[in-house]
Length: 169
Length: 106
Image (tube, rainbow over all chains, first blue to last red):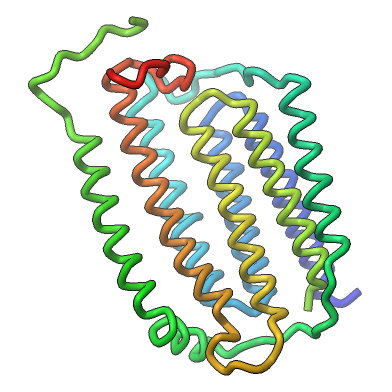
């Protein structure tokens, strides 16, 4: 085993364990802390795959922005930050569906027909591809993000005129 | 280089963990987090296959990484919109439990 594979095994194990802990945690703030570790280890895996631009993007967008956004939403929504809630509905159906999905995808992964050797690219080629071949996509992505943020501001805005229903109704 | 099948196996396991979260939790924020885990496993697949793409077309070789950049942007947008929906839901029905949001017209 090379150093890459040992590091990948460690990072993949960390990711899977933190994902399970995040999904089983009773307090949602703990969930977000586990999920931040998961995002950071996924970014490190991107670095191992010789995709440093995507690793930096993962660290900035996911481990930075998304985590802080989720924490902020919990601060606004919850009356007390550390409020426990039960993990509802771990039933036979959900476990069976999860195991079925895992078996299907693992079977596909283990029967993958590939024989090419792994290759690495210099980052300038990615930027050329991103702004020449994917130029229209990047512009469309900008418009999608802009319109979605306008919609988000509209949704999150306090509407004064409408009555607010009482809790539990 | 990491073998491709180990990468795809790992991302499949991560995807099924996301499905487990969607099926078991009822908090809207937890649903968003589970969807983010599934999105991340898909992005990891794109990057892994980009590292094993056959040589040939000069610029299209890295199209997997380009699609991954677009997907990360879309996932961030989705989180922003989902959290705005969480705030609106919390203001209108006073709870972020998806079981409480049973009616379409609020």
